Image (tube, rainbow, N blue to C red):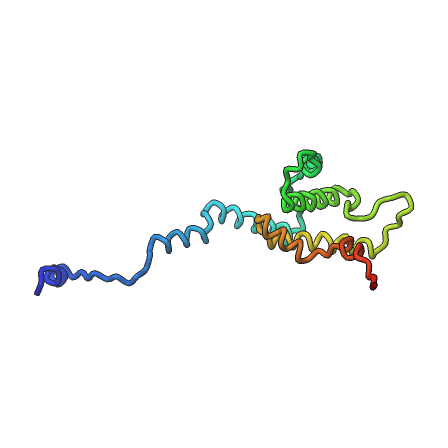
Length: 167
């Protein structure tokens, strides 16, 4: 017997190389785990919610207030430094904040003689939904957003400007 095998027999240890990368497995567990404090906080909030539902009590809900003026400054900045993705994301945030504050939907038509119909409301919701979907698909990548925008939005001016004349 060679010396390595003799050592293994005497100590009862075996060198097992099963190809498992323990460091990456531990890192993956850490990434998919929640801290004990965050779990306890969520558990406490859920218990409070359940108690309030059972007893008919109201609970205080923390809401993030969005500064509409800051969103407007960012959106209507004359420098033009926002990417398309940032512009649309900010516009959607501003729309949600305005609606939450009871102001009219900025995606609806405005004017003295404008009467807002259910069709207008449906179209505004559709525009917001499609834009939000494009922002979600882009996941922070402006190039992906631009590609998605070009794929989904039809430019009616370009098609209308080409006359169908035969000579």
